[in-house]
Image (cartoon, rainbow, N blue to C red; front, top):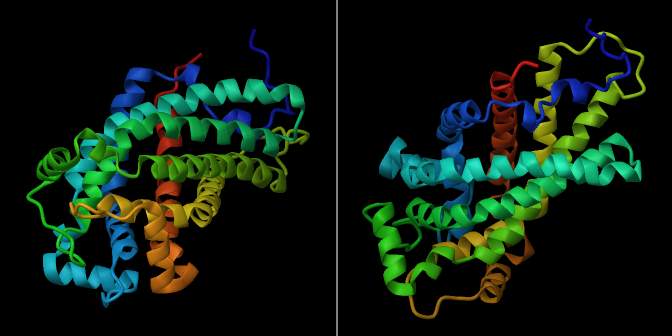
Amino acid sequence: MNTPPSPRVAPFVQTEINWDKLDKKRFYVVGAGLFTGVTVALYPVSVVKTRLQVASKDVAERSAFSVVKGILKNDGVPGLYRGFGTVITGAVPARIIFLTALETTKISAFKLVAPFEFSEPTQAAIANGMAGMTASLFSQAVFVPIDVVSQKLMVQGYSGHATYTGGIDVATKIIKSYGVRGLYRGFGLSVMTYSPSSAAWWASYGSSQRVIWRLLGYGSDSEATVPPSQSKIVLVQALGGIIAGATASSITTPLDTIKTRLQVMGHQENRPSAKQVVKDLIAQDGWKGFYRGLGPRFFSMSAWGTSMILTYEYLKRLCAVED
């Protein structure tokens, strides 16, 4: 005889599917296809953001619109996908590492914070933040070389940057000049950028959902017996993704700008250090220079975050194993 569910079960318990309830093989295979589609849709935003961040002072293109206009004029639509082949090749293993680390760490993190009896939003923020940071740390080993190569392709021929025949050409020249360590140019800043960004994103996403559900009358102490509809669940998840993207982009854009400039520097002998990049940005634009590309980065993180989380939650529902 099945026992009916308790009327006091919080919505996030009903809507979140834990790692142990997933068909892992299906999760990875279907997920690769779904996330490839999302990457295709949002990749041009990354190209625009990167070009804005590395533009020299004398370049006329100072807005996202002018960058897009220039790309379409010179290269057409394919120009918006420079470096895409390299990114999509490395995205699959990086995503597998990230999601596996995220889900497994999240379970442990929730157990770790449970004894402290924090509120649900606080527990979610801490556990999701720990999981997001850990997942990012693990995936950086794959992601950084891909990032270095793809960003050089994104800006080739732009604002004085070199041109290449493809991703292999970029990687070969980097290794020839600097060895394998050249592919990890900006690794420290990448960790400093993406790990806090991932922590902030997942912490904001996890906690904002709990707050929204409470505002809708579905808190853990709610007497509601009817679970929320699928459309309401999707709406709350989407809103959580937007809030998470806004939070993470505001916090990490300065570090991302410095990291991007370091990674796309040419093969000259005396490439500037992070300290010199900071000085140059301040000299050119003042402190606002650190927020170059904030608009596209905000849009990218919000759009990517919302699309990614809805795709991710949909993927988990598709791959859930029946009890």
